[in-house]
Length: 104
Image (cartoon, rainbow, N blue to C red; front, side, top):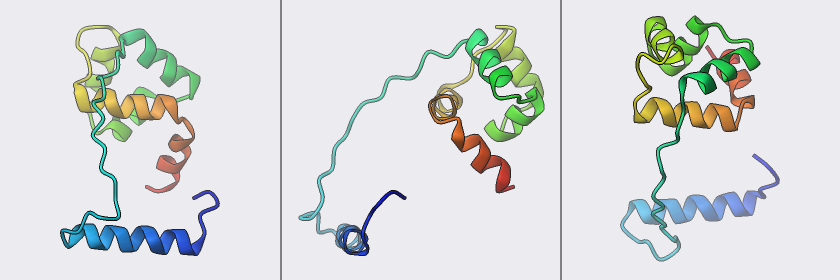
């Protein structure tokens, strides 16, 4: 978790507790629209191959069927918004794959 001090963590927890009680004086809330990433068949296959993932393993991690991953990779269908977002997170942070695989 980086170099956060205990004091910083305590301040953050206190601010979150106050927010939960309806007091937002210690927090800044920002709403940022996020575009759905453009993820296509080629990029899914490339990512999977690059990280030595089977279609079955990727399907398990994304919560979809193997047949769904196969359909994406041949371009028959496309991932929905939430699957695209999760793929984007994994593609941008491949170290998360190790975390997923060690906490089954």
